[in-house]
Image 1 (cartoon, one colour):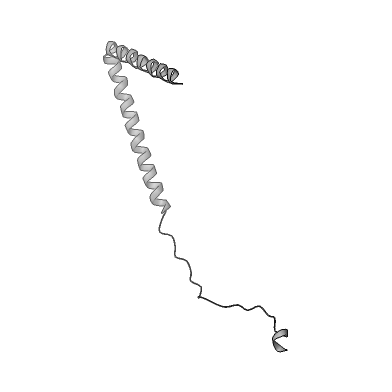
Image 2 (cartoon, helix red, strand yellow):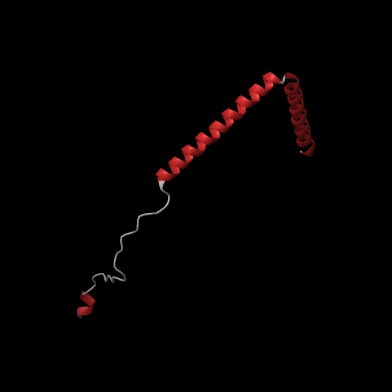
Length: 86
């Protein structure tokens, strides 16, 4: 008769609670510093290449015109190839 009255929930502790470890990755300050450094480096490279190209164009206008014409022809040929393929 006692078993019928004792209907309390039975809770069994399987393992004791362990506090989770602090994540080692991502370290946001390292990500921020490396992203800023890479952005500055790429920015300096693009700006330097643009300055060198602008100086080259002023010193060699004929060659720059020929290069511009060649690039235009290449773009037209690539566009034509994609139009024919589709």
